[in-house]
Image (cartoon, rainbow, N blue to C red):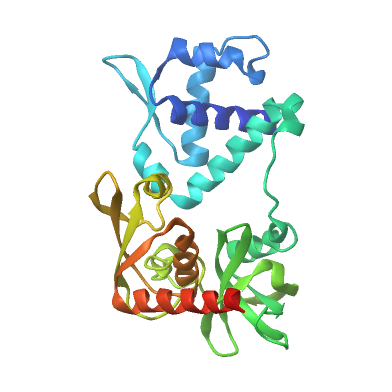
Length: 300
């Protein structure tokens, strides 16, 4: 019963997100086409109960424009910018869609996230109760594993891999751990105090991907062919992205970002698109050197 109600809440949020504004009649027409209605219209009292439950559970307000009698999600842009809440709502919406489309199960292909199943729950539980975890970890870059008590600050998903960002009590530094490289993770009886002034969003604000560095952010300028520019418009490389110039042949995109390992790798991969690094000079030279090294491999 609770699961069925939960799916209905998600359906209503997802429907208003997709259509923007809907009257009660329009909501009801879409509701009758869904599997959740069982062929019965949504009573006004039920709709109002759903609105209240959605506000309490998801902190999402469904408002009514009294001039048009249309319902809409209040401050939808702010909701879109809330990465954690949007990820959760999108995940629930996809799950709801798959439930509705049971007969299409074999025609919907999803990506597997191997690291999210074994350790994600224990990490989230430790974060919720501020418990220190006993970590045994094997990095791809080191021959030997590490063992340390860590305080899990937050988790981040990047390219099908879950990462835990945690404070290592052996050297008191904040580090990033891929969940699929964890050998073991045990619950300890010790707790930690989550710093009030710490912000996960600010921690990676000027970074691309999962690599953090204390280096200052730099102004990066890319010249992108017109066709490929469409991809960057619909899926920005970084939240600081600004299209500074647009012509029939190319676009100029500007960023403020740290030149971390992940970002450098992404810039190298954009070479397939014939993307040109205009600035800064240090990044341009790094790309040139990288291309020359690649050429040597093929010249052999």
